[in-house]
Image 1 (tube, one colour):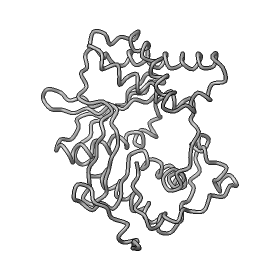
Image 2 (tube, one colour; image 1 turned 90 degrees about the horizontal axis):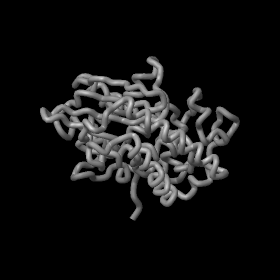
Image 3 (tube, rainbow, N blue to C red; image 1 turned 180 degrees about the vertical axis):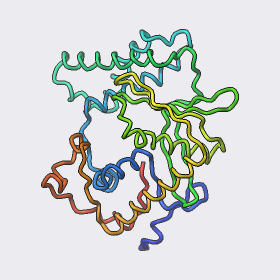
Image 4 (cartoon, helix red, strand yellow; image 1 turned 30 degrees about the vertical axis):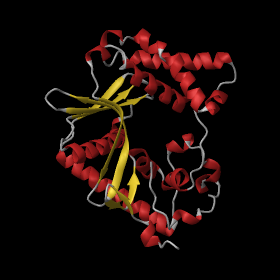
Length: 287
């Protein structure tokens, strides 16, 4: 039986027909560059690993496992001791990351940069005084528009009195004031999801920048999260317009320097591949 586009553009989630699914990272991709969103989400083009991205993955894993230890043992030394096993775990699951390092010396130098980042964490927080309620928490919620929001929260702290704090680790450097709103947008989406599912507006959002040892904190309110919901819905509507028209326009910025797809981008003289046949008729469910 042939499936019509109208049939294909809805799918049930917990009994609700959703129009699509979106994560904070993919929403950020579209805001950065619609063509980047297309390459990652529609074309699903592979991207080679980078030393910075792999550092982020490994350090996140170390900080997640740190809280498995009894509070008195959550020291910088113990955390750095978790680094080697975290790297080996990643190398087993993603063998291609080993190719980033030409020899043992370059790997050793990179691991030292990870140790520096891990040690810097302890100048920002005292993990012996923290008992996270959740780590790497998967969350999802269906908005009134029937759009499904979903993603993973690095750390969720819940006070005995019920206040919620969302923490996100960044292994890079903090952003300038001009880009703070964009940096916080991801956490506002998570706060919106928690508000929809738990009925509580998180009292604090914090981005922990381990690259230069700074923390960006923000206290949201219901008005913030209502505005966030409207923005997310607007992003999805723009994605739908691009999907139906096939017009995924590139947006040139300084972030292009880190893009893996310059060879296919018209801004750099490239030509995108033909859109997959399913790009219009299948529901874009985005991780």
